[in-house]
Image 1 (cartoon, rainbow, N blue to C red):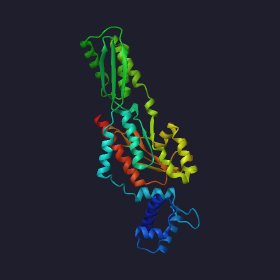
Image 2 (image 1 turned 90 degrees about the horizontal axis):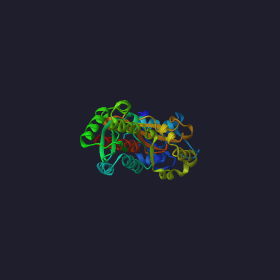
Image 3 (image 1 turned 90 degrees about the vertical axis):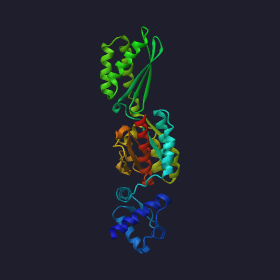
Image 4 (image 1 turned 120 degrees about the horizontal axis):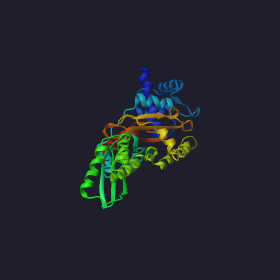
Amino acid sequence: MQEERRLAVLRAIVEDYVSTEEPVGSKALVERHGLNVSPATVRNDMAALEDEGYLTQPHTSAGRVPTDKGYRLFVDRLTTVKPMSTAEKRAIATFLDGAVDLDDVVSRSVRLLSQLTRQVAVVQYPTLSRSTVRHVEVVALAPERLLVVLILSTGRVEQRVVELAAPLDDDELARLRSTLNQAATGEVIADATTALRALADDGRAPERAVAATLVEAMSDHRSDERVAVGGAANLARYGDSFDTAVRPLLEALEEHVVLLRLMGEAGSAGTVTVRIGAEGPYTELAATSVVTTGYGPHDDALATLGIVGPTRMDYPGTMAAVRAVARYVSRILDEA
């Protein structure tokens, strides 16, 4: 009973501190949360939680605030990820379903996530090396000029114009299209590249030209280090912790390599990971928490999306929003 009551006190302190941004006192807890015990009992519980490292007291006359250890216990044992409302789900679907291509999906996702959580949202572009070739299309722009379209499982589309040494008739164009798709469609990038390189070396002249162009398009790994960031203005809400939390995070937002490491490897789609304070890879961001999950078609996590922000955040709401947006983005990539 005593442990359950102390956990209830910790939960109440976390919720109040996140909401009010002020240290929480025993009298306020009793009044707001109906703990059915006296303020003196709550004070004893708060002192015990402080002794165990879950709370700290900024000033001797002030109430308590959660420590990183307190937030961790809250997330692991006390958080119930609140489901998104029907209206919220409808709004997410409507906003994301209007996307026209992968860049638009990422752009919309990062804006939506920052609005839902009021934090800084980060979306990594799907990793090229883990995707497969969905289709290769070849369109004649002129007898000696082709438009080659490469469509990947991530929703990424690459377009290249290829100039030929001699004109191509419709039958030859159909044969070329069939040969390219037999070599590449359904293959992961590495295997598709190997098959197309063989065509580029040994095929007929049109095959050599188009296959070499596709190999070049597949070798462009810039997207593996691309991230989209949104909602940096939300950090203005944390002016009281500018030097400890906001300034280092603003500097990190300028370095995409830092952000990618901060976000971590793409976990399995649907699993939300929360790293609090010093659990992250950078000591200068020890006042920052990161909530992430993987996303991708068919539950295959190709990349990571999530939020970063000061440790004083609404963890249940943030986790729900991150999970919901990832599910919708995964569904869009599935249907692309």
